[in-house]
Length: 198
Image 1: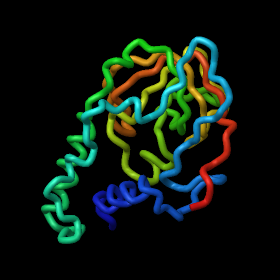
Image 2 (image 1 turned 90 degrees about the horizontal axis):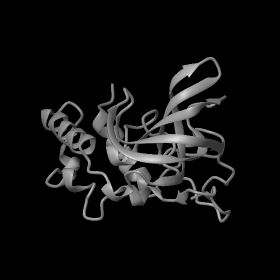
Image 3 (image 1 turned 135 degrees about the horizontal axis):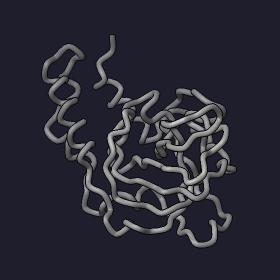
């Protein structure tokens, strides 16, 4: 059985564009959505996932002093390193200036509350496979979306555009810790193309 530490290392490699693991229709684990040139929804400001990160926060700080090349899956130091990383990422700081902003953002959906074909709550994550094929990203890269009108036919890892009011709100969703909540007015299928082949 593989240790979760291996999966965390995998996601770090994927974030740097080394993925060749095709999973979905045109997407590979670690792929991010491109912003389109089309104008956003009126009344919402298009943002990027990087804007959710406080400027002085270093996501790699939790890895300082850990030499992964010397750790094996059954090494107690590997388990301790994993817990240290998980704790740091669950407590990742958020960008307070975005609280109350009306924003639009592309991402991948993970349904949380569903009745039949209707989804009323879902996670929005920045890259394909997060929380499903690889561990969750830091909490400041996870948004708990509450849909004002349930979304029909939303499936796991569907690429979407979401528009709504962003709030700073920590929530343990069962799929990971979210640092933001978005009251969404609009959820639309993402119409851009997958990232180019690497």
